[in-house]
Each structure stands twice: as C-alpha cells, then as structure tokens.
Length: 215
Image (cartoon, rainbow, N blue to C red; front, side, top):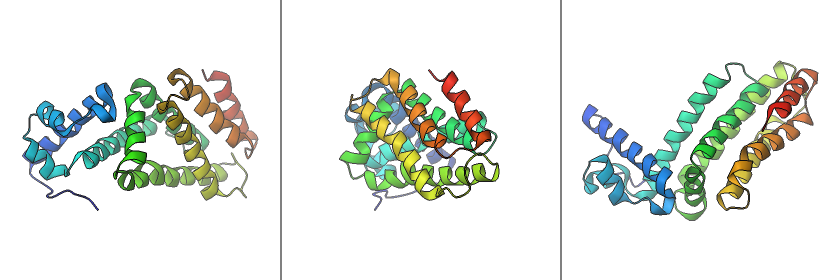
C-alpha cells in the first residue's frame, strides 16, 4: 500500500512534484539507487524534507515515481520512433529502453535494487513488467493482422518471454555479468532470434534487416 499522505492539485504543488522527480532522476543518474537520499533530493529540488515525505512517503515511492516517469518518457520516444504497429513497434520499443539504459546505466541499477531489494517491488512490477507485456501482446496481435508472424502464436506467452528476456539481460548488466557496451547488441539479437522462429516472410525481412544493421 502506498505511503503517500496527500495528493496536491494546485499548480504550485504540481511544480514541486516535477522539481522533486527531476531532482530524483538527476541524482539516480549520478549516484545510483544507494547514493540517492531523500535529504539530497529535497535539497536539490528546493523543498523541505517534510514536504517531500508528505507527497511521496519515503524513498521507495520516490524512486518508483521517478522510474515510472522515465518509463513514460521511453514510451513517448517509442511512439516517435515507430509510428507503425507490429514487429517494428516491438523492436523500436526495445531500442528506446536500451538507449536509456546505455545513456544512464545507473537507471538499470536503481530499477534492480527497487525491484529485488525493497518494498518498492510491489509498485514497480506492474509498471515495468506488466504494462510492457500488455503493450507487447497488443503489438503481436497487430503483427498477426499484418501477416508478419504466424496466426496461431500464443501472444500472451510470447509477450512475457520477450519482455522478460529483455529485463533478464538488463539485470545481468546491472549485476556486472554483461558489459554495458554489449547490452544493446545482446538484447536486440535475443529478441530477434525469438521472433524469427514465428515470423512469416514479411516479418522475416524486417528482422533480417535489424540483424544486419545492429551493432
């Protein structure tokens, strides 16, 4: 259950929330999860520590809210990258996520800590895993209609496999089991190989092109 004590609707409080979340994102990018403290966020955002606790309740929900905002930014970038539905949208969604991770590796570390080391996991799992699975499922259904993949594919199961494949490799990178400069290549190839097994000619041509141009 959320620890948030009060939700503000005034423009002034909305501006405070934006400042707090931006400060959180800035600190996560520089210090990671462990190095980001409520006191430092409040100081950087120019708000009282009590105000921050009154809005967000504590560090876990603060980190959660910042990560969700990052996810929303990535989703907007995906829409810009992939105006077409189907496999192209799935692949470019991965690309947008990976670009964010490569640009700021500490986000992956913060997400890992929040998912597996804190009570924030209950808040983050639906947002970071449940939502992408549902969006991927919808794009797989679009891919069927476009003749890119086989019609008898179980979209629910495949969506889970694709999303968890991505996050598994991202987590491996955050645990230093995969070099950060290899993450984009490995995730892209893993996703493409899965999709190749159920692709029809139209989809296979797109996937082959991705493999040819991937780093």
